[in-house]
Length: 278
Ligand SMILES: [Zn+2]
Image (cartoon, rainbow, N blue to C red; front, side, top):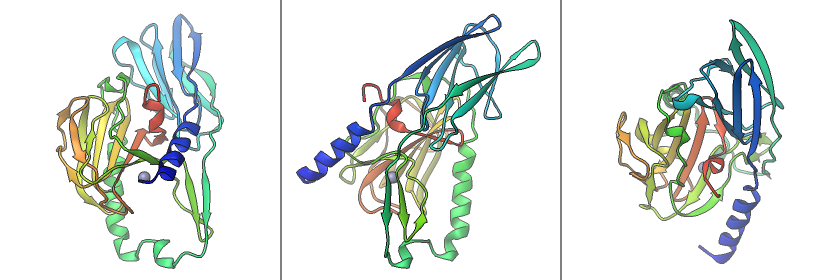
C-alpha cells in the first residue's frame, strides 16, 4: 500500500466521521422517553422509556428489550421527517423526529465497456434467489439485546470505501455503496463486533462471495462479504471478538477486502456510526 493511498483513506475516514450524537427527551403521557444517537440519514437512535409502552415505527412494532431499550434506524435516503407512534389508552400518538440530510460521494464514470455495466441475463435467477435469502434475514426482530453493546471494528485494514457513495456508470446510476470497505491481505481475520447469532453463512454468493450475516437483535443485522473463508455456521451463537471468517476477494470484488454492512430491517445504516470514538 503506498503512502498516497493511506493518506487519501485517512482523509475519507475522518471527513466522514464528524457526526455528533444528539439527545432528545420528551413525555408521552406519564412515560418519559429518551432518545440518543444520530438523527441523520444512515444513522440510528437508541431509545429508552420509563415504563412499557407500545411503539410503532416504519409500520413495525418496536421491540422493547431489557430496561425498555429500543433502537430505530434511518436508511441512506430517509425522508426529512420520521414518525414515531406511541400507544396510550388505545390511542396512537405521533411524535415527529427531524432527520438531517447526509452528503454522499457521487462519482461519474463514462465510456466503460458494456460487460461491466450489467450482469449477464442467465444469472438473474441466481441473484434473485440469493437476494431473497438475505432479505429474509433482514425481517428478523430477535429478542436479544446485543445491539446495545459497543461495536468493535470487525477487521484491521485501510478504509477504502465509505457508506452511501454512488457511481454513475455510462450515465446509469448504480446501487449506492451501503457498506464500508476495509482492505487487508487475504486471510486476515474478521471478528464479530458484538455477541451475535449467525443467520446466514454462504461460501459463494454471486455478488458477495463468502458471506456471513449476524443478528444483534431488535432488527439490527450485519453483513460480511467477499470472505475467503467462512468459519461459522448458521444458528451458531458467537461472542464479541470471535473470529468468524477470513478476508478475501470472492464474489464480485476487485481485491481482498471486507465489505461490512449494518441494517435496521430494510434500512441501511452507516457502520461507522456504530464504532465508538471513531
Ligand atoms: Zn464494498
